[in-house]
Amino acid sequence: CGTKEAALRGADALMIATDWKIFQAPSFDAIKDALSTPIIFDGRNLYDPKIITRYGIEYHSIGRMAA
Image (cartoon, rainbow, N blue to C red):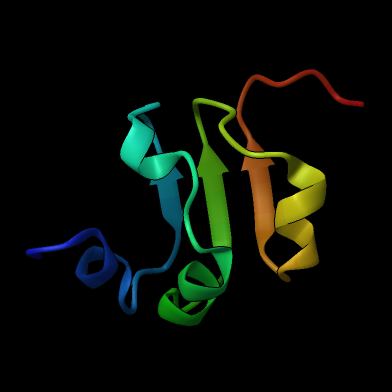
């Protein structure tokens, strides 16, 4: 995979394990379109769950306290 977009194409899910700036403001539409199943597991709690679910993506924020 030469790019982050290529790595997502057809993947079963996206797992975030870094808080690098490049991953902090993604296109959630592009993520949803690329994944075979739109699921994100976020180990760094980078994203607001309310925003991501608006895109139709199942979101699991690992270690975040329930609201």
